[in-house]
Length: 113
Image (cartoon, rainbow, N blue to C red):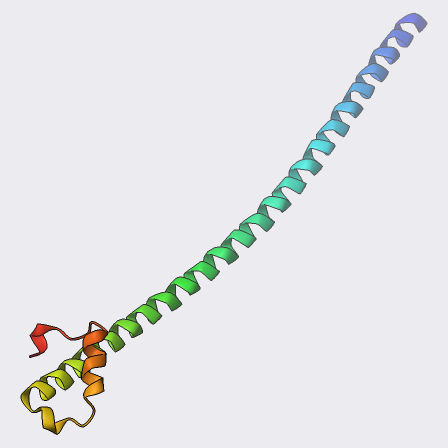
């Protein structure tokens, strides 16, 4: 009986040791997973921030482009009217340089005459 007890105790001790090692390995793996999850969350936060910054920049750029298109259209109309007035009555316009500036800038188009 004593022999059986020693044998069973040895088996139980061996199994307890194996369970302890397995538990330690699982705890280490869990800690590594937790660290990876933390790093991934930080990366996601940084990426979300970058996306938001790019979105704001794109929105701002789109607004600037729209404003520039409007100003360009207004300049085309203004120069077209200036050219038209000059062609109809050259003496009425005191500063012909404006007309030539419009023509040289490529703003003048035949459709304005």
